[in-house]
Image (cartoon, rainbow, N blue to C red; front, side, top):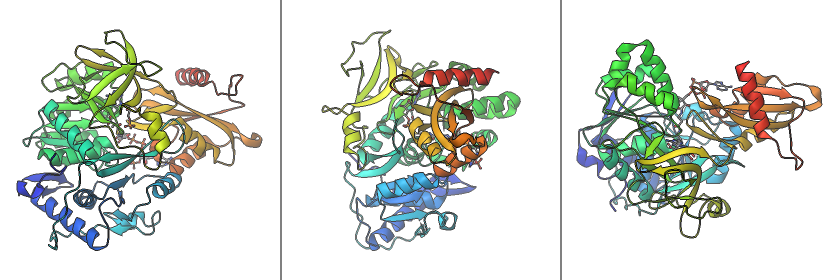
Length: 489
Ligand code: MCA
Ligand code: AMP
């Protein structure tokens, strides 16, 4: 296998990234990345050492991520909005050799030892960088589970290279393409697919520092050919496009509109098709497996259809005992997958890795699906305690634990309720300590500052007690009914 980032410099003056009005060529990016890698090496960083990077949409962030990849030092991208509690966990767990930021002053209060990324485009020369082995770690990406704090998924160079190559083939993604994305750079979607995918393919990327429908439409008008976005973004683009036909025409110029990270409702799929003159191509995956199914650019696209498994992956449906199910149109089972995109395990968590994988190497996704002749349909999830909101995965347990840290909360339970914009909305039920009912807004802020703003409950119900069964387990179905009744009131 060739290295994950092929010789970027060979692509010379072609544009790699458009960011904030600047065009960064492949040659420039290659020099910046190499200079960063050599500087890190001269400071004693070795292949395998982890480096945390505050993942702002800035050139310095990209130079650090590219340079770390060239050096073989896995990056641990940090969500710039990460709250104090979650940040402390990630830093403790990943024990990085260094914490870097493109604009370090913005993070000094949270990581006092943070250092800037020098945008030095003159590599010092010296010994050539040794090429990382395909099984070396490229990233440690933190992802939520049903219980406990987020776990660090170790993604290798091989994982990412195989995935990007298979997706490039499925989407006809070539050097001619200009991808538009406004996704965060601390998850698979924006980071591995959007940023590094573009660089591996040799295409160009227009990276918007934050999502805004008019900016996405303008970028498409300005030469964009593909869009990667989550369903919440498509919902907002459709709402915007219906009010602004001129912008809808701009977006309709796209060659391919790709949606993923959460289910795209049928209604939105149909609205996109009507408004932008093409069916979106859905694809499906997890942080731990990268993308494993994708509708092809020249294949069938339909609501709910996430496409066939990528060639080279072994994907099957299994029952509750993890026994493979015979294929059939109405057979529903949990998706299990084995192959070169499946991660190397959770950092420091062999127990969690063993629970998610079997001896054969199959990873159990927790997603329930059907397999049809046209591809896979995701129909649900095994665990109700995993919430997908705005394309972000959030464990109910981590939000409950954060709420319980608040002095006026005696008991707490969290569910995901259907939401037209976010897919699912985080709804919290709290029981006050000593009858002193906490202000819902204060609790929301508390979670946003401890974890991250996207993990904050959007609705808080203060209740006298939580409904529990005889075993003491909270009856979340009853809570869902209360949330739904309150939402329609
Ligand atoms: C509001 N804000 C607060 C608070 N309330 N901040 C602090 N404390 C509070 N109490 C602020 C936020 O910081 C933010 O500020 C603004 O309010 C809105 O935040 P929020 O509601 O969380 O987000 P949004 O603006 O509604 O964003 C929608 C979004 C976003 C753009 C769609 O959810 C998003 O980027 N999603 C992408 C997720 C993703 O990439 N997932 C991929 C996972 P300000 O406005 O100033 O910023 S990888 C994956 O799933 C797999 C592999 C796959 O298949 O891809
Ligand atoms: P994450 O852990 O953030 O990588 O999220 C992975 C989860 O996102 C999967 O287990 C699915 O539940 C969900 N997901 C990703 N893509 C899709 C899709 N196209 N349709 C439905 N669910 C999806």
